[in-house]
Image: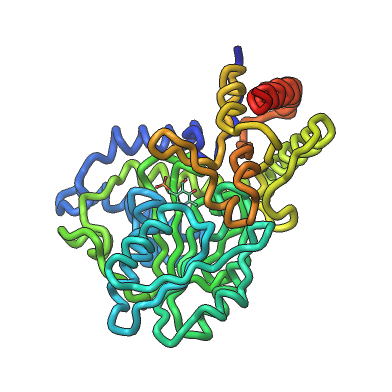
Length: 387
Ligand code: PLP
């Protein structure tokens, strides 16, 4: 059975060009980038070239990019690093209810340490209102953090407008662009951000490698102590091979973006139209107009999302739910609840996320099996309700 992977928002396979860049760097450039001898200097050269190439793809200067272990660490360094550095100026942070847990749990930890956090709600399409962000800012606000694109619904937020407001108010502005980079144009100048998180494994790059853009002059305190690597913001011997592979991945993703966008949107809309045509009582979640090209989130009324996921997995089709499994029970997605979806509808949601290797034939295959599985699960849940 040929398996079908429709979970690219969770992670992507490393593309062959990136595998090659990684293998070459592992084989040839093993030196410690801090060493003075030629082995070290070769590693340093590859590190700095990679920084230059990656920075260019988001409109940043090379010295504004700090390499990290991925999106989670970038979010931590941005939010906690800025909060600690700016503590003397104030203790208030503005974020939203739909952020990734890498952001939400940083904010929770900061609340335990005496910071105050305002969580801005979203509308039914998962959109953040820039005016609501502006309205939440106070004289003691030190940081605004709003994600560029939501990982569950694919909704793209009005970051440039929020950036403009934050700048006018003199407040540092962070965006988690982990799902956006390589999928939609990302330019730190156009967005007006001071801090921006990127992750390698969402763009066919390696896992455990990412970056944080730090605008020159943005106050930031390191979270890890050690040597002077990465301008002391992220001490530790650099993962040069992983970073070289990450640079290759971001380069290719941004280069191929226009073509990829058209292809991904075509696949997504074919699936959305097929679902609506073949299956009754479905609801598409998230903004249609402001959306990433590759994420489709749909609720199938009366169907347990987890059961649907497992049934599709048995057919060799990998998708995802937004639900979180905590202590044996399944909690509905915090993002869908924030959009005011009823809990049952949130628990019946599926995320289909496309990638560069998906085909129309795969969408057709999914549309062959999905209506039958949904009908069967609905029958089963009706029987359960009647017993
Ligand atoms: N932020 C968003 C929006 C994400 O989707 C993810 C990963 O799912 C992360 C942060 C965390 O990134 P990483 O897996 O590289 O730590």
